[in-house]
Amino acid sequence: MAPRLELPDTLPVTSRRHDILNQITLPDLSREISAAKTAIQEFITTLLSSSTTFPTDRADEIKEVERAYRDLLRQEAKQKYLSSKLSDLKSEYRHQSSGTPRLDRDNWNSFSQNEHGLVNMGKRWVELQSDSVEIDRKDQWLRVFCALPYIWSDPTRIIPYDPFESEPTQEEDDEEEDVKVDGGIIELTCPVSVKKFEKPMISLKCFHTIDNESLESLFRSERSIQCPVPGCNNSLTPRDFVTDRLMHIRVLISELREQIR
Image 1 (cartoon, rainbow, N blue to C red):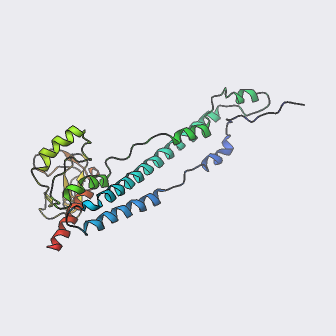
Image 2: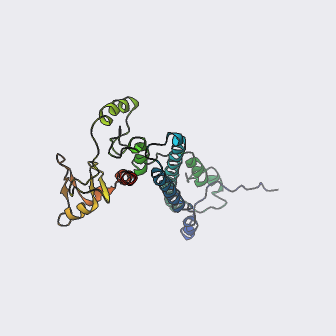
Image 3: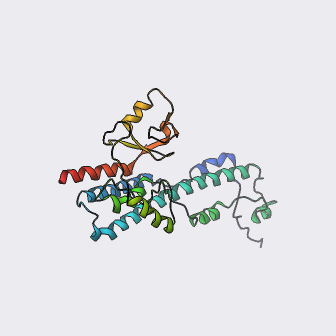
């Protein structure tokens, strides 16, 4: 009786069967993740209107919501990471297969021992699942969660540190709290129009916030501008700006408190 042949773990894919690789995709969870993030943001916004001071009795609940938000960021980062790695794996597999002979009885053993060095996509994919990923620490709502205990009752208050700028050590955090929280305020008005922010935009270069209407006026005739905040010499373009969610929350708190008075 002839010995039973076992199928090799890795085999080349012919150019005619590349469609099989194209069918291997990750489920797109971006819509679900985005909806969950929006629900958390709306919950916090609603909670802000229910109390003029930080609700210490709900501090644990707020922390739990923050952890849930961080988990969503982690899932989002993991999906992007795995999607990129899957694309790389398929490209590597196609490239390796193009220079590999087709399987036949004569070269069966060489494939069984993977002498051609073909990537084992199944094994590699399992290994990738355990890879850790970093969340986006520049996420706008992480700034909001960081600031909430400080700005809840006073939206102009300076926070100890801004995750946009740095992630300090505990020693630096303690030092900055003494210096930054005890003095100075955050203006809720645009430095250009001197009007309360309506659509605040923050520069990712210098972290100064300018209202979108002012930016549109400044960029109407120029592709780049010098930051209009006195003392800042950074050259800025429209691409350097993103919506300032933290300033938006500060203004929202300010307006809510004014309604209560």
